Length: 313
Image (tube, rainbow, N blue to C red; front, side, top):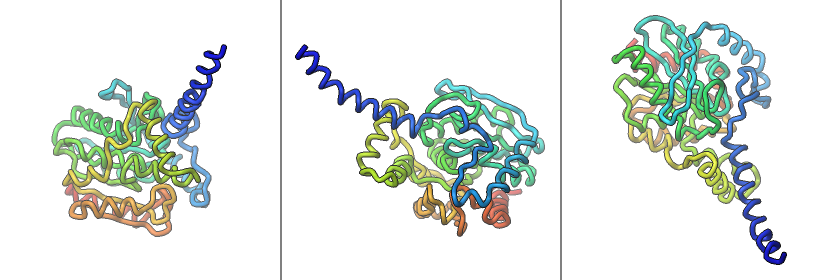
């Protein structure tokens, strides 16, 4: 009995530690396939609430646009889903990546109007572990960057070599497309539009846990270990900051100056790392992902200027 009691005393802390790690994984990286996938599940915050009616109206308009449902199998075997919106044959293609626990028609309810109005085609990806795409772990762009490459190969196989492609992302999706820029991309990729990206998965996790009134370093180490043990990925395996120094692709960074989730200082840091091919546009008074809603006229002008610059039309 004494040996059993001693063994139990030794195992109890270990079990508690494993439980803490798993709970951390579930909280930060697991994808709950329920309300998360509702286009109209808009967060209630002091920055969002005044814009709520307009946001829901934009989502309704995006939901009404006809689309084709398409699928690919990514390199680690997951079935990934996207919605394809056809404007005209031979048009440039925007491949769009939504944010953390977001949906394409919510996060791009404004952006899709800009693209279609310009006569461009749109492929709105449902990131792994979101909506109809398979998977249960969100990796903050570490694995999603390879999904981006797989969607590029799908697009070229379907629409042909020579198709001009823009990679477009918001929040985690913005960081995903920037990280993809660190991979060998085909010449058909003409540029990247990244709205409110973070500099690295590590940096955004440190920022979030630093706001939870717990020791930042310990909280980060627990979160990083949970990602490795239960998510199967390393938070430090890739970063937008590293990727933008490796590519020469033209990049448009957009960020709200009042972003309370991903500080606009992160876009400033990205710009400072590669100012020769990055254009930075900051929007005063805009919260996270809200630049379009705060100044729609300027947002559309900036995006169209960039599109014309890199697409030549």
